Image (tube, rainbow, N blue to C red):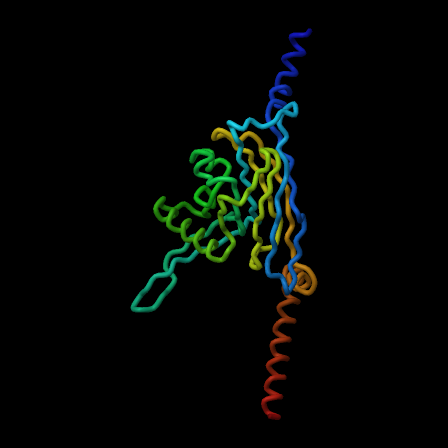
Length: 252
């Protein structure tokens, strides 16, 4: 009986021998109004070691924080110069690419885990799984992947910061992630990873909602839920503004 009980408790005891992450974020809801210029998101938490043990100073652990979302369908077009004019050439559509991706770590991610682990957990821009909608030659896909990442990085929507995470006494950590003004709205995830000796020991996830507020929210909801009426009102307003501008010009 005792042997059976020991076998049943073994997985729990083994699980208890691993550290646990207790993460949190400064804002669970971010509202975007007409004056929104971006926000600084603070991610913080603690590392709970088994049986309350202190961390081993000879084997320091590292923290990686990934904020991403929402998944979007994106069409990427490649420009080509023909007779001195830039025209659209080849294109590739992605079924599911994050509209925003930021990774912050206590050290450069290449120094923490190998390429296989980076691919499994999508740690770093080079390890993103972008899911093209159709099959393509490997060289073409790599070219379009690099182009998409570069475009979103230049717009501030993709970035890496290898020294953004601060760890205090091997237990407490904190990091800041910049949310740009152009960020898409939707459900985001903030994933925290505890890494030691090249292995991911623990992971935890928190959700963040970014949505429009005020008049911007009303316009976005109207365009989504009542598209026909929204289009008619937009055309009517355009005609009214055009007629008004013409009337003023005639009087002047």
